[in-house]
Length: 295
Image (tube, rainbow, N blue to C red; front, side, top):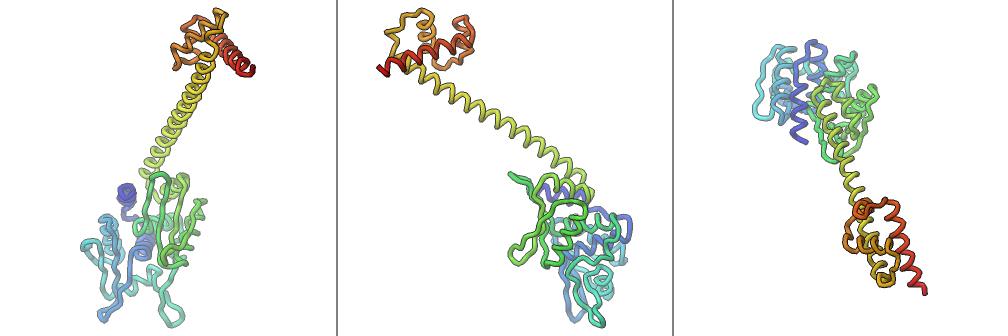
């Protein structure tokens, strides 16, 4: 549900107070929504998102940590300058391997030493590539380009006893959550309290609707059964109506023929007898018709 995804992103797109958390969030945004550009002019980063709040937050993060100002253009934020190479090292995107520099394909551990940093990192991931769907089922997913990154995200979320799964889809690695409880726990972890409330309201409404539907289906099934029983009784009465001599049985037979849609309770009220009496007499009429058929 695109609208719900946008609401959640709007709620969590807030600049963290601590610099360590800002680095963690910016690293997550680059990992999940960014690409690195290499050219003769140096190294650059492009962060892409359809959500304006995400790009505005990315701009604030770069400005607050590196004191460089870049404004989003359309659905992209492009960051260039001599500082970008060191920025990528700070964010754990690039790392030294001996004398060589290479890309780090997972989550660099120094970025998430504390719960506050983990929370900010997961916020950045959801802002960068998260989506939520609440239709017939609950579904949250985040998609990554490397298996290492997807595995690290699963481990990071799993450390909080949140059930998360991983699947490969079209050369991407999708981390997803399928249950209402796990989604609520995830949003609570990243501070999306309004999302938790909305999910709880949705779940409560579904429960009420489900219970109502069960009752309606049960009532319809009972109604169908009552109609079927009434039709069998009328068929039996018509076979023996000229042979009914007992006045009590005759009164019930005539009432059933006149009111095929009446329940036992309604027939009992009509004849001023008990429901049990109606059931007994109609059963007696059914037996008489069966006995006649056997002869």
